[in-house]
Length: 267
Image 1: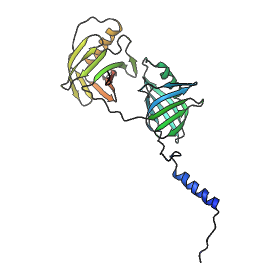
Image 2 (image 1 turned 45 degrees about the vertical axis):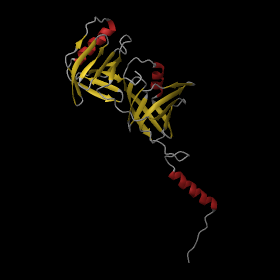
Image 3 (image 1 turned 120 degrees about the horizontal axis):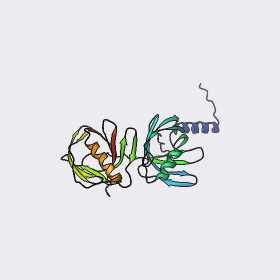
Image 4 (image 1 turned 90 degrees about the vertical axis):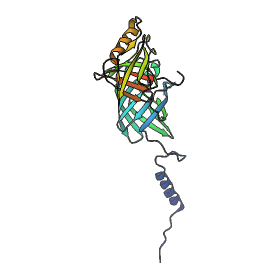
């Protein structure tokens, strides 16, 4: 005859609670699954020193298992990441670009906070990183960004690249150097002072500009220097083209190049 063992009601409730806790790992109190910190995140704001700084549209983090790539809002950067499960990450800054940016307050604050040991607070579609002094970086899941097409897009030159460094265009030339590659592979635009046109050849990820035809206005100072640099780059032979989201990078074999941004619908 079977023997039945009495289990006190309180013990039974404890077992049920333990089972529910185990099933709820990786979920919040409402049952929504919490995100893995690794992935693409759009930075919304920083809170530090009693102030909240709202992020520029381009501020983001792409978090991998041991490396992070991102943008402070203007300058791009890399960092080494060492995770302690999903509760914290230790960030060691790596390389970054050095362009002069309109919102340097946010850039400087973000760079200062995003280093050392950071506590991770997860919520549905949200991630908050907290420093030892209580400052925070608030982020939300980044929507998938479709790469702008190389052709038919108006590209505005934002910086000139030399090896591992990038320098933003001087204020006198900012926003003036633009170009568009048409479907028939003619390119036209402005070098910062003079208008130009040319034929281009596109083979895979390589773009080669033919001889440039341009107007002949005299261009002095920083604007003239930018124009001479772009003329030399476009005439230097095959350039490697890389489009990431709304950013185009053209790079020559010697490491010189440019970054350009796709015009928005409002521009």
